[in-house]
Image (cartoon, rainbow, N blue to C red; front, side):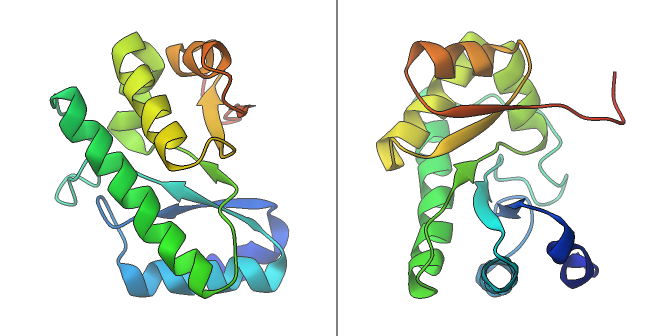
Length: 152
């Protein structure tokens, strides 16, 4: 986003798009450098591979395909973070993936399994009282409940 540099000094964590719905290696690297400069915790923001709809279209995928897509996106950002001597702090699903994982126990499970496959210590940002929160709790994955002041 054009105002990343201005807001980075005012936040404590940021979600970095991993190239599937937005971003590319250059924007990921730029965001990581800004986060590092301002002491902001960086997290992966994976989504459905759907740049045309900005990851906001619900897509039904086989579980193994979805898991591989999520792992690939987290890994891409993690490799860039390592180049900057940074460690990822969290993972937060984007758009339709976030909403579907909030409602579906099965998709929530796939998402949590992908995060665990990658790194069992990564925190997962989850909506309150969602399937994603329940699955993270059940599987012993660190999580943080988020709320949106601008939503019901």
